[in-house]
Image (cartoon, rainbow, N blue to C red; front, side):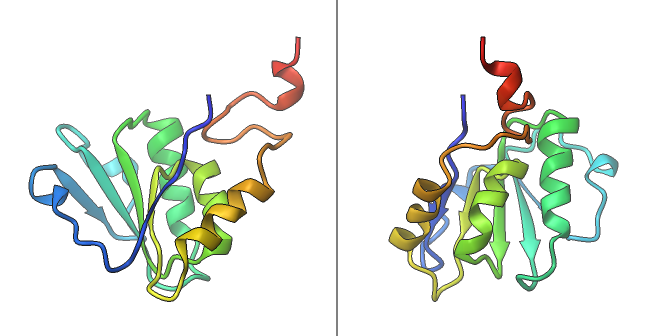
Length: 130
């Protein structure tokens, strides 16, 4: 079962943050060194689109630590990063203000499946075919 990456417009007000236990993790922090007890959402920062450390953090959180809450990408989030975000374990992304949600959705339509395993589907495609 493939997860769906929830897309959030930059101007959307985050009313749920006041009721959730949100951990904002700097992109130079090791997720293995923080307590996730009681955490509902982890926000991972992309200070600029070319800084991909948050991809590794998301993978560690979802695949290695088994975190099942929301993993949200924030900061300089571009449309062309979204498919990789989903594959590494992100469950939500706040798009940069100049990015269009409709254009973003088309990225997922273009790349509907992958041969390799990832954070969402650990088994490669050839292992799943009976």
